Image 1 (cartoon, helix red, strand yellow):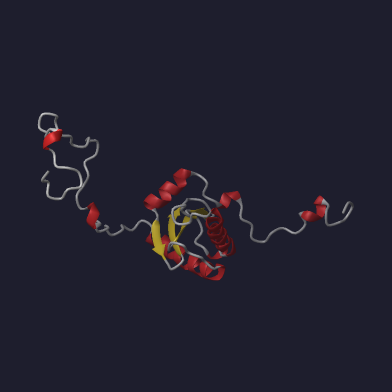
Image 2 (cartoon, rainbow, N blue to C red):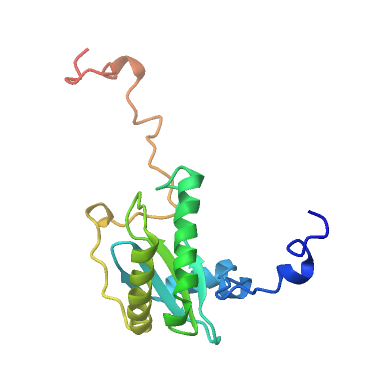
Length: 179
């Protein structure tokens, strides 16, 4: 519709969005994510894991970590990201100011709802902010991690002199080892 008052640039920008999500409100550099994960306080809920770290700015920033390993479908990953981003945007005023917040889904194959995500985000962001700087308890090693691996060493190989000749080796697949 040419000449319509709704199509003109003057009227398109007349109604500003009340709660914008600007680039300055996002974590965009890999180093920011690394610092948040290395130094940030954590809080886990049913929907989210929140990692919070002070950023020295007057505003909070959002980072999302939604893995491809859990959600093979890009459509599902993007839906989770959209819900997390919208929850951040809607609850921005209730979040602690001056924090970098990284949101990670708390459970595999999660299908979050916006209302529960908003409520949990505000609660967990404040908890994670309070936990920043406090030492985390050491994690107990997993059973498979009990023996440390040697780095940089090549796998052991038998010398040609000590290996049995092919005629004396047991046939493959035999349990007893007798020919």
